[in-house]
Amino acid sequence: MNEYIEYSKEVLEAMKNNQPIVALESTIISHGMPYPENVKTALECERIIREQGSVPATIAILNGKLKIGLSTEEIDFLGKKGLDVVKTSRRDIAYNVANEIDGATTVSATSYIASLANILVFATGGIGGVHRGAETTFDISADLEELAETNVLVVCAGAKAILDLGLTMEYLETKGVPVVGYKTSTLPAFYTRESDYKVNFKIDTPKEIANFFHTQQKLNLRGGMLVANPISEEYSMDKDLIEKAIVEAIAEMNKLGIGGKETTPYLLAKIAEITKGDSLKSNIQLVYSNCKLASQISVNLNKLK
Ligand code: PSU
Ligand code: MN
Image: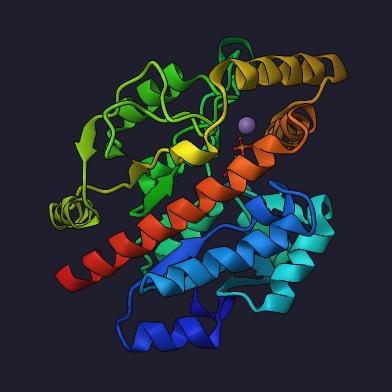
């Protein structure tokens, strides 16, 4: 296994010194945002994580290796290549490694690779989930199954409103994945702070979240935890406006016959276009906020180890 993993110097050093680490995904760089905002955001995420006391480990597949911790050049490479790098979920990992195909890892692949290195905390924007219309398309993100299988705590801003939030919560419930609301009892909807759905547990401090996850691990309850951190008031969007943009984007997508792994990147880009970049601005800010919280949770978790 180790022959396939390549750590950055910073991450290797952190592991040796038992420092807290936070994993970051790379699909958000290549497929989630346009260049150059994607690169700027990825680097700022790393800075915020360091500022809060943890070491960032951005994850991708490059030259046939599972890379844990990327250089600025590597992040720039993924950002510039954008949709030309392979969006890599769990099912793509072995193929990309075997054939030395560069891949940007989604939440599912990133969680799996992080877990190989015993990295327990991971920050992202929004997770994949059950898509609207899943009763006919069967489109359910591999992210959910990964949360059920892999011991990683994922900090997100809730599930994106391009998804069916109710069905996403049901799926997580079936799989026994706890959904924690950070200072909130309702599930945030990515661009907005609230939805019609309740989280399982409202917790107000990073320390208590760390203690919860630590206990879950000690009890051998295989699987992850989802921490939903609402976008700050300042950057949250108007609910009706964003809903309109989402409905329009989905209709356009169906007209074009787009499906499968292209669905999420298409919708993100289309919504940014419809909202004239406002959704992208919100997206960036919520990711920063998630990085901050994830780093704080990781610091607390590290003290319990
Ligand atoms: N949320 C974002 N930006 C993203 C994604 C989610 O704010 O780029 C990406 C993540 O990598 C996530 C993936 O794992 O979309 C989900 O894709 P799918 O729905 O095809 O599983
Ligand atoms: Mn899908």
